[in-house]
Image 1 (spheres, helix red, strand yellow):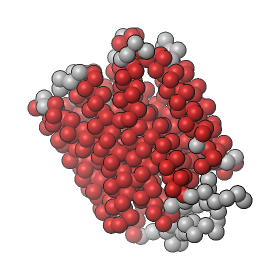
Image 2 (cartoon, rainbow, N blue to C red; image 1 turned 180 degrees about the horizontal axis):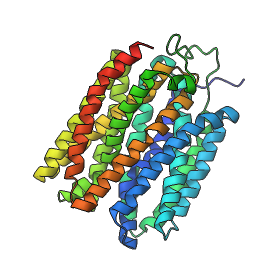
Image 3 (cartoon, rainbow, N blue to C red; image 1 turned 135 degrees about the horizontal axis):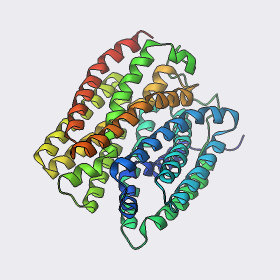
Length: 397
């Protein structure tokens, strides 16, 4: 074996990679100029985000199986090639289905592969600080929408245009994924950090599926992640409906991304210091509060209130995203983490489709997001109530 790599370097590279692939969350910004060029409606293009999230989920699930047959570096290389092909192809589209395939399927699946492998490998090096590492990694993923989203927006609305912007994005993403491969290192079995995550609990996917706790936890994830992603997917439109310019809408999406990123570190620390139940309950409360405030701001046509609410929604969603992988590893063990975590993503993907699609359909049918927001409040309150039931089920494992 070669010289052991400092795990801090692995974490830094993991954060950079997830920040880069977090660009997938800027779909609502990226499709704007494309809609203008081809006359497509937001209802038509909104499926792009849903498809990309489904591809992301399937990519995350298959990553564990491909890695077992090949290696972590093989999986990330495959993801890098798919992202390169996807973004390059987006620069040449002329039909809506091409956007679905190249951005939704290619890029979504590629992000899922890279995300799950880097997340799983880094957490394997931080079994003693799972919440801490998960928080930093997912902060990078969340902030990708802000840092790269602002840069992409500036290029999209510049003389470069959206076609050349996609080409530039494809090159940057590919290079970063390839140059960080040497730091993608799985710890040796006798590594002191590779300790048992949950004493006596190390479930295979099939074993996990047979536990009542898993199904309650899955429903909790579906509700809160689904409603959170629906808000993220339409974030720019919420601000535009309340009087914002496209440029300011991009800023608002960036503010949401800051909340999304910051909460992942904060709740990761809460997870390690105060435990999973406190972190989970805090996440659910923040999400519900953000949606209620967003509804108030949207009804009152108050742009400042909507922006603050989007930050809070991002904070709540990011908190849940941080708690989710750390919880999966804690409850069901580390040996099959990537497969189990991927399974949760795939099974929760219908909620992603439904939430984002319903918001677009309601907007097109009524000219407003009001009915969607009222429904989102009800759904998030149900998710909040489920938090306590999930904890009871987990204790019985």
